[in-house]
Length: 418
Image (cartoon, rainbow, N blue to C red):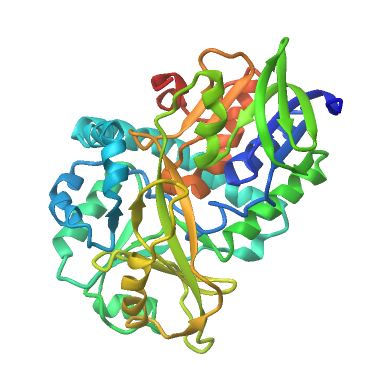
């Protein structure tokens, strides 16, 4: 059977319809380029669906920072809610773990925090513009997000506040009465809190990504749901092989999150990409006692946030293979703790599992592949992909058009690992 070739004269094919891919597709269309967005699933249906919906101004410090060394002994027990790890996986990926831990130095952390701050700031501005343009402004809440401690952690909270202030990020220190005044419908179990005042959140991250995708198609972009088989150099452009046939374009953007490394391997790229798996479950809320914002329980190692479908409780990190069977131990451990804070009923759906793509330095790849013209990489955003998707997409679109991105992207260059 002859291969079907469609859309021979496309400028850009974007692979992956999560927040990063949708953002890149829309931004490229805004540059006047012809764009096809391809994914096997509907937009915002994978990792971009299951996050906490936080548009976080303060998520500039990666997990592998100096404080991680102090926490390692408790994590090595493999019983802590914040981190579980699979021993066979750790043995097979010892090299990745060593590189990950090697970045947990003060100098490396400061450089990465500055880079992430530069990525986050324009992204938050774009989110606030796009969500209005996409006619989804009812989904955004400008209520900040709240990190709280059950223990007497005033010194810890003050140190964190001061550290954020060094990077121009504002927050408010709260005592128990102030927490109760801010969130009157939770039980007074927290002694100290830190309110991130420049942060927003949404009530359905998946729905926001879908709204951005509609904005893309409304601007003349094309969306196609099909399985991506391979990408192959084709003259001065690329051929993308899908189950529906082959698509040709001058540029290809790989924004497939935790699946990106698989697609790039046949081209000779060995991407050091691991996944931090995470879980959530949603529960029927008490409409008379609602939450106003996401709450991060620092001691309990979980986050609870009001979503369109109910109270979403999210677990910590699970280090294992991307497609390994689910383990709900972390989620089972934190749900009773969440019930001890806010009132909610039965689960509205089964537990959800996702995989957050992470490189050893906890910075994404944003930019050109080093050995192939017209191949662009946009993945590896670890916990902050939903926050940073728009600026990543705008940066990729600018680079394709020969312009400068809206932030210094030097720290994210793919050639640092490829």
